[in-house]
Length: 109
Length: 114
Image (tube, rainbow over all chains, first blue to last red; front, side, top):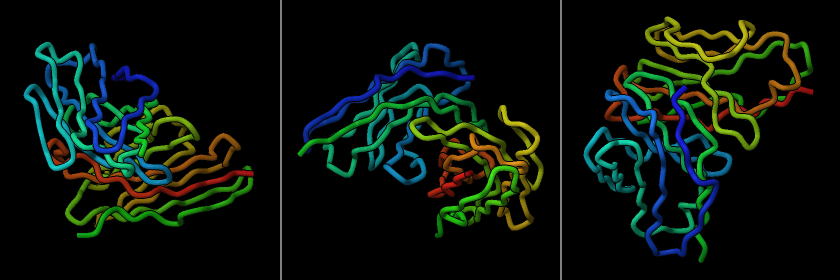
């Protein structure tokens, strides 16, 4: 199974940027990096994905290193509603998602 | 556009019973996956259906089975329930190629086996 490594938890102040790291050293050439988050009592929510290039959407930015072995999810201005478990996953198209334990982000007022 | 709808939201069953969980996919999605999430853990892949055929299965015993219907809605059936089957069951739908869209998850069914 495709595995990623994330810190267990981190916190940041409301309004500041939250930078969530992920190691995916076993990623293969045709696999994408996906980020999902899960707010308490809800299903996971897709955030962003990327292959090689950095990506940005209305929710976040994804920075992927040149060797593709790690990435960082950036929430530019964290709010209290961003408190959640964030999962980093690498997988091929149409493939299952292998979730680890994720990183718990706590945004403090 | 509607999201993924799961029913029921909560369920209590007795060990040894059978249960059926239901999922309505997001409009336009033709692939559905089911995941089991135990307390404090990440979701674990059970199986995936594409156009009514199972096209991937995780490490779950045969008493976990599923169906996908022509309208792309789906069912998860679990026979001979065990206490360890207590978990949040999540349904996720996607297009054939989720690369650009990711999976859309429902809010899940919380199953308690007593």
